[in-house]
Length: 384
Ligand SMILES: *Cc1c(COP(=O)(O)O)cnc(C)c1O
Image 1: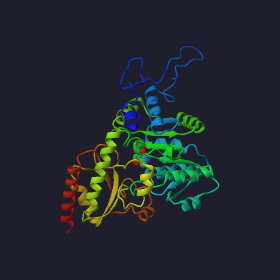
Image 2: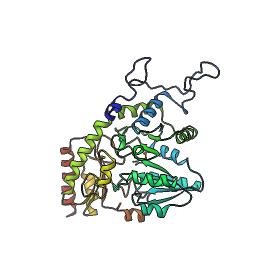
Image 3: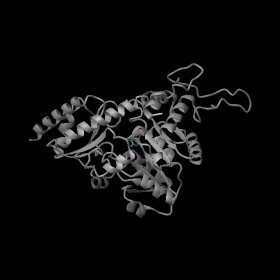
Image 4: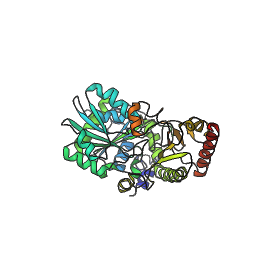
């Protein structure tokens, strides 16, 4: 069955007793045992809960994995995954990393003796140089945010497998609709489901998908032991959002392409970062591993003085953090999402004071372009 169909049908056949098409919210945390030594399959909601279980099964299937785990946020999902590791272990991670993941690694995991090297994960030489005898895993974001760097998942997971390392992919920006890392060789997929999967800027959630029996059992233990699980109401909201994922991703993509083409020609814009543009350095690799493009992209304006008035004059597009929702949000990474990454690293990467990141919503592209155009015009008038 095609992924669009599977998405629309999430949970629709999971309640044969009542025939409910929208799977119910089971709020109960406790489940009665029929008799000693028997269970309905549910005992206590932290371990397993009916509404969450339908979501977890759905995401495991969508990502071609063996087990899914729903967490209270994307960071909770990453913390649960990082709990696979122990004191003395070392990780290799994409250098243009989500700021919250960087903070978790540097402020929390480091306290437990887990060290991290940040490299361009698409460069095998950099991976080889970062590799140590205690390295346990590679964590990839592709595309990265905000610089949209691309990593070849097939190449890196083959390299990692050869060395006995796990490959973990944060697939938040593309979702299984456009990219399925496990099919390309990854062992674990992580999502901030807060973003595209939920899609409406109204649910905080994280998901983990594992491949392989042993890894899935280990993750189930960690998920239950740590307890950062997703509640039934949010599990339901997330499934409700995922039913329209295919439609939304297509529109996010077409809007992003139209706006990037317009921005690339704009006299106040120096550079546009979007892997669907043929001159993007990761264009071929991206197309070989993904069936489409995200609605996130970044652009660098020619003059840093434009940023403040540009953001102030945006009318329709909201100046706000987060991404992946139906509403357009535009952020200033250097002071918002990436403020936790040291300035020296940020500058080296190119996350500077002229870089803006746009998460395109599903509004009509003409309205979005008109808003950007008037904000540029008014910002330019103010600084000249
Ligand atoms: C937002 C985000 C996270 C963190 O997820 P939360 O749901 O905010 O906890 C992790 N990775 C990426 C790529 C993200 O965009």
